[in-house]
Length: 112
Image (cartoon, one colour):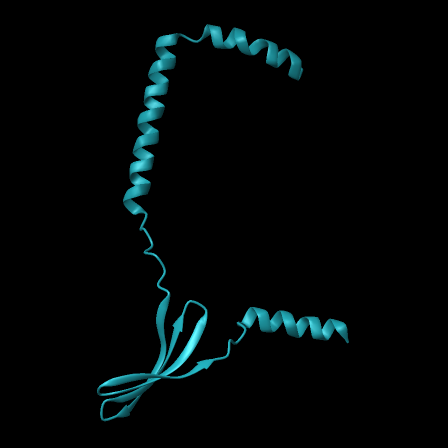
């Protein structure tokens, strides 16, 4: 059977379907779809918004003193703290991640 004859046969097939069976089938399909969506929603865990401030490392210096590296979005800072104060010691230079380092190394090797 050619594609053209299959397309021509579609209205005949559609007309042959009983409307009660079609609406019942649609209702059954809708119920199954809602049941599936409900099942998915019960198992999906919503991820909280990613925090823009995080503590990367900290080191206690004793007697209520410390140094720490904090990251704010993509910038990193070295801070120092004592009993009653916190001070910015320096802004740290950005370091490329492993993927960027590997890509740069491969580009250097290819250029040789």
